[in-house]
Amino acid sequence: MPDMDEQARAILRGNDRGGYTVPTAGLYPYQWNWDSAFAAWGFATFDVERGWDEIETLFSGQWGNGMVPHILFHRPDPGYFPGPEVWGGIGPVASSGISQPPVAASFARRIYDLDPEAGLPVVARLFPKMLAWHRWFMEWRLDQGAVCITHPWEAGRDNTPDWDGAMAGIDPIDVGDYTRRDTSHVDPEMRPTKYDYDRYVWLVRLGRRLNWDEAALLEQNPFRVADPTMTFTLLRAQRDLAALGRILKEDVSEIEAAIAVLEAGAETLWNAELASYDARDVRSGQWANCVSNASFLCWYAGIQNPAMEAQYDRITSVCTYPVPSHDPSSDRFDPKRYWRGPTWGIMNALIGIGLQDCGLVERAENLRTSTADLIREYGFAEYFDPISGDAAGGGTFTWTAAVWLGWAS
Ligand code: DGY
Image 1 (tube, rainbow, N blue to C red):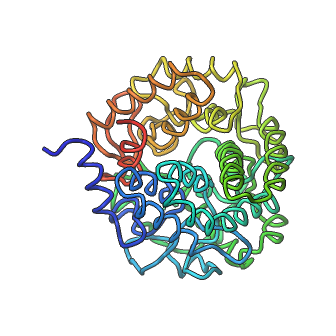
Image 2 (cartoon, rainbow, N blue to C red):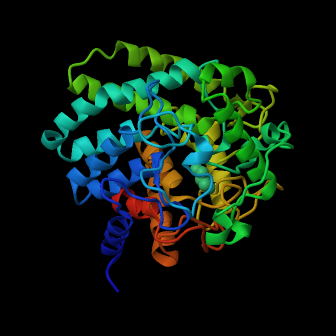
């Protein structure tokens, strides 16, 4: 049996489609946005140039308005739904019409640090593109300085209880016929329900009808949720982009101003009654009342908060393999169903980096070792049961392999 590093590298190579990496064959046969940034990080641990290619290919799909799509459909694949013909993306590469957590600039900074000389010209090419993407968020997606999503897939945390309230406000009566493909690849018990899927597809059809016009979506989309995933990752990405900009001797005053806006925006996600960062439904004004793994991205964004340390200690103490995507004490916790309970290596890596950067080094180290144990014992799965450790979702998963190489090992 090859050692774990070798297995992880083999997964990245096996999922490589030439310039981009699929998350896993079958279930996700295209280039996904934030998966790709993790893939770049994983590749860069043994092939910096291949790491940069991944990010450059991602930005080849950037739209004229700056948005970087959540899926780029480089080549047709009938095994996935909803494909390019359903989305009707309006960019240079066939794509979806929504974005995903903006972690690319943060991984670009990490890859640059591995080899500054090789990285400098690439960073110079990518800087204006990353700036335009971040600007798109700042222009179109803020609510009181917090970053909103317009579709559950945009946060990457598809079926988290965070969106239950906003999803209940959608009546997908005219969604039409469609056939899911995900449940032919993975046990349906580990995937979102039909109730969720009807609403996902309904939102895609709405966006397409509006030709992905953000001004029209702002007016007409019933789903608009200020989200900790987006707010914290963008805040971190702006800090990292500013650092890269300074290296390039660019004027970073616009990015610094954005950081101040996002710092204030992050505090509008503080649910005092829950004593946690939380998702906020912009349409109804209601809190989600969820302590999720995205709540714990506060440290990654550079925000210290002792109440979050207490939440973290409470939740991690009841899981063998933290960090669960939803609070195990909640009646909505479901240890195997995607983002309603399972532990995700990528979120652990971001939380761990944040804990470390904020000086919470013991928690950071414990999380790193428990994640390493989890992957060693249960494999490079998409996600894991936080109590039993059982592998769930897709296998031979790109971002879990990348997290192993970049952080856990
Ligand atoms: C899916 O198809 O399950 C994805 O999460 C959408 O990005």
